[in-house]
Image (cartoon, rainbow, N blue to C red; front, side, top):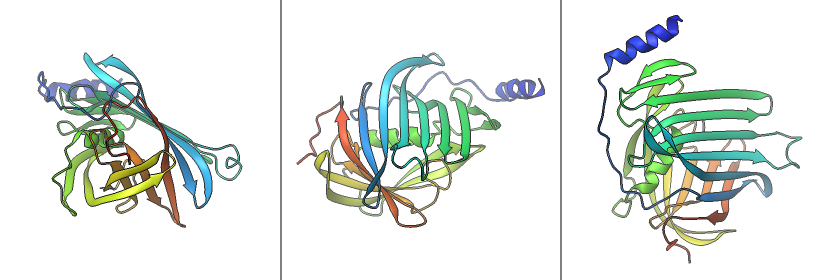
Length: 254
């Protein structure tokens, strides 16, 4: 009861926002689905998917329900079973999140976290408590989809995109470092790509600076073609195997 009273007291301290930004989005739409093999060395250890199954209404706004899942394949389960999934509810017009969920099942480790982002009052109500947030703060999934909407054509090697990411109980700076262009071949084909590196200390998907590289197609859709993640021993590579229902033509495919 005391937590509820504190929450409503905090709400009264923040002014109510009625107008929101509008972001042009040529990158993704409802029904998009991207599927990846998750490889450890020469072994396919799991399957990952990004999907946008539907548009819902949340907080009086139209939102994309975006889901990320990663599961180990049955042959790998006896060694280290993974059943992770994340969801973000992303404002259709403004490309910012209203809700985020994280559900981790990795071996014996379990974690469940959720946050409602009151973007009108700039406050987050989470399973950890109630916290102030800056305008248009992101979760780690919504930040990735926001970056896909940006025009990266004028970026130079070493340039950074600066965002803010909320996780657990605080807001962290999130920078995306641009590394340049490369051509990458995966099961889904051969693509011209932009190489970016998220630099973030917390957020569930990306845990430490320098831990991950992402190859995005060099076109309007900017779908991830390859993701390379450093681990204690070696690295884990996720490679695109299939894609469905893209919003714009995939011009970067060779």
